[in-house]
Image 1 (cartoon, rainbow, N blue to C red):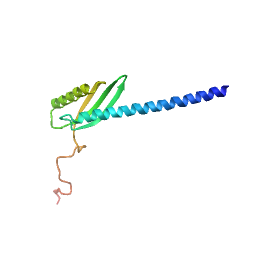
Image 2 (cartoon, one colour):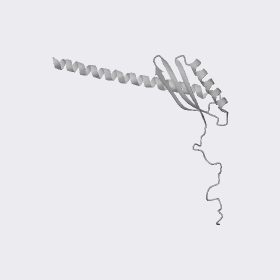
Image 3 (tube, rainbow, N blue to C red):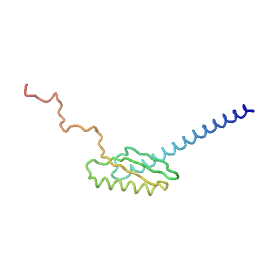
Length: 130
């Protein structure tokens, strides 16, 4: 009789693992879809050059988004803050299950690390000894 009980426990354990795996896969797929949807909406906002990072986390029945957006490096901090406010306002009104959105603003610099303003190379420079 104990072998039947052990078999039943083994089957039950395998079923639990199977359904937990399915549930995790569904949750991860849902997060990816939500992150992609959020990213696509943000990229259409005037002033946003790129979305560096976008994460949507589920908290109960709601979603919390954390984004890092890239803006023009020549604008003021005030203008960058206004762009972040527009992004947050649009996300909060567009997605009903979004309870909060945290927006980080960074300047868009495609050639990071920064290069020197001097474009001449060392070979082209003449030295005093020559």
